[in-house]
Image 1 (cartoon, helix red, strand yellow):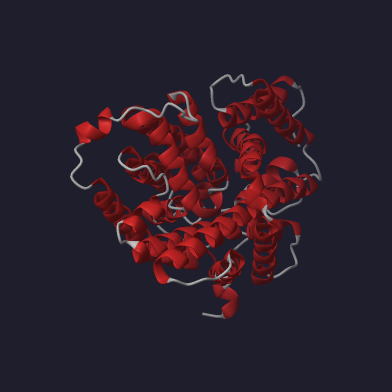
Image 2: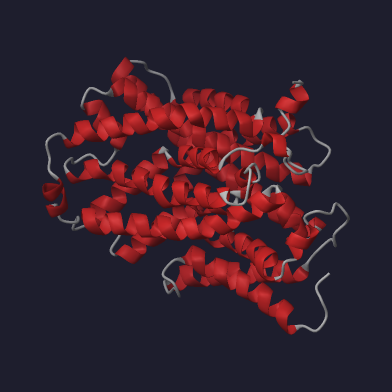
Length: 428
């Protein structure tokens, strides 16, 4: 196999059938992405704020809703065998898709930077506590960036192989850590622990919103992974095993220790029990798998904007940009970044879902390589309307479904479908 074959992400074309994988393999990759420090923090906040029963309800209800939407977005990739960005080209037009891809790339650079910065800070602290090593966080951030870029250059196959190794190890370490933290505590005792008085999450609906918002960028970009599916049915397996079961379990297991420990950080809890080295392993592998996927999707986005550039070079440059954002302090703006993501990304999924399932235009054009218009202004306008709904809800605190991400997705879908249903001439 040539080096060109090894580093070809099929960013501008369809995935060959010979390189397809099962829905289970795709689910393993997605779960590997979900086992990360931000997820641990979200899980502890949900369970600590709502208690075990309501926390679990919010987690699994949010996971089920994500799985339903994820099934649809995965089907688009599985049936077209195209990346998210290729699908977007049919929906938004040639130049319009460049604008959308640029926005997506910027959000992914941000996610990469946030995760890399958290990685550097946490690993520096953990290495000092467990190994006595004294090194600045920026050194770990750069080292992690090199590792992540090197893996991503070899594309989905490398991510798949990494996840096959990392996910079982991460799951075992997570389960062992939780078992050690909980000790002889009974389920009844855990259920009796009241919610915190100073809880940041006041209701189950708010918890559902946080669960969905925390992973909605991944749901939107999942065609990048599902285009490797062997058949359409793999979308069901991949979506419900990952979003419906795997990710919620990660959140719940990560949140259980907060019910019996004053420490809301799972890594610190494990280290306090003498599990420092396994805690370091969880930290390294969790961040590795997550940021490799962030960088992979960012590279696919940029590849659509720069069609003549080599995939490996795009990945290298994107990794450098994300690492620089981490070093520049993007972590200090994490909350604002999450709010922005929940507003601008879901309408993109709403556009291509409406275009594919309701208008069926992407489905018709997916087998063609001919030119498309520079801009499909109905899609651009519908996306802008979805974003406007999100900004309005964020400012007012009011929401239709209680989940801003879903509201923006539905608003964009409805706007695009209504415009094309009411106007007399067909969309071209």
